[in-house]
Image 1 (spheres, rainbow, N blue to C red):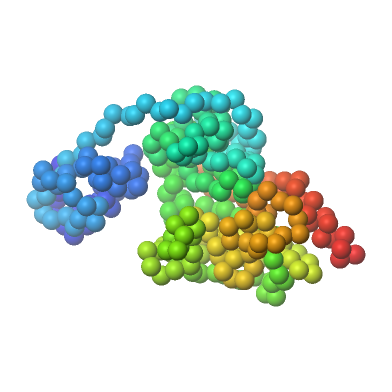
Image 2: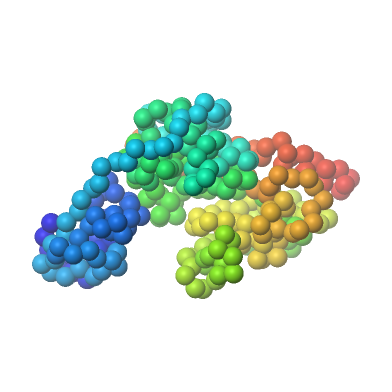
Length: 302
């Protein structure tokens, strides 16, 4: 592939993402790091700046055989067509497999439900997954059956045009009726398993919150994601002084309710269907264990 003068100065990964509609930028970056993309016969970094006359060679490796097994696990399917699904994930279910955790995940269940009809853009370990929510967060997730749907939905996430709203119960009474937390999130240098607000090696993160109900020591909020960073709402609310109730990582050590995880629920998702072109929106109320806590708090207020 001979690069024309118009591409001079462009990053290698950005250029390839724009000229290869069937490959995401993250997929291209993985191909570069694995040595499957060369410039003038030599390996290059993703941030290499192209020059006139550069020759790029791209080799797609054959798909790897996955060790994942399809499992007949019940799914709460909110919407499904030939291109995609919307699934209501329960608390406690991991979205996609990882080392040492290859069974009982949402992906295992999707493989049984969809068979071979799952997008493979993210590789064999995460077929069909557009975005994810934490194990102990419940709620709505988008799943792609084909690459066209995957690319279309991923682009909406990238452009921040996808609607993702959460419901959370947090510690303390929030005085403001609404607010915006605009603080970059990156890995915590003291604990690589945690995320934190930091300027170093971070990405922009924006969360809008709206108070739904106030209690003596708690506040029920609706959170709308503008970006979608790992643990974003949990980190933002915690470092804003209002950690989510039941959060074992960013929450308080002593909790009055016996919970298995944070009271955080992905209640609404809205998007333009990547194939049909129609706007679709789905909503699911919080699960029973979440509502039971709210009922207890409301009784106290009486």
